[in-house]
Length: 277
Image (cartoon, rainbow, N blue to C red; front, side):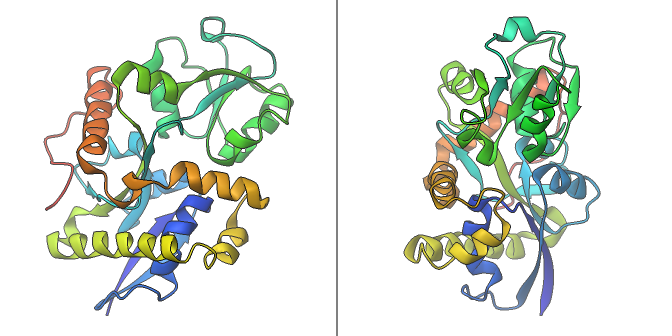
């Protein structure tokens, strides 16, 4: 029995997707998993240190890891209307934020990559965990923040203003869905193992879709926001058909993001294919 390390976030979409895989609901002959739940930037850094066999990752970080890791077709977060938001304590616009301090959930997050792709002048960054961005703004530590995950559903009640929806900007500019995070496998695992894991992750999500209430206790154990309505909204937003399979449009979105980031010098060029088939 080979044991593989598997990293994913404590957010409801990830615990929903990986519940069956890590609770013996999916048959995986010859393999077992040791899961590690961390915020997305911690997972990014662990992958940069080659410390995980399989991991959820920001697509920004994937741009720096393509020589070591291949992308899986299942389990990721990619869709429409689910992008990061720039928010501020007062109504403002992106032009006024140039040269101002902006809180981000990690330098290698896709949230930061979209911010940098939007334009120049947003390099004064305060890096804090994603759930600490709004508290940091309330303390006056930054002029604006880029929020992800549950914060999308709670920022209005906390008194903040939306400056721009970076996901909507991306969709309008490219016509493609937003590639937020994917699942990576170490290329050294080999094609047979990687394809088997990819199938297992899809089976895990299929199980959750067929038994939607069963993962709830596990989800609530790890969710930052325990309100059932917020949990449901989070899963509905980030888990979709692209989570089962990236398909042609999802692959095009990832390739476009990588190409644009390479052109801006935000990630290194790489000749490795996205997938090991």
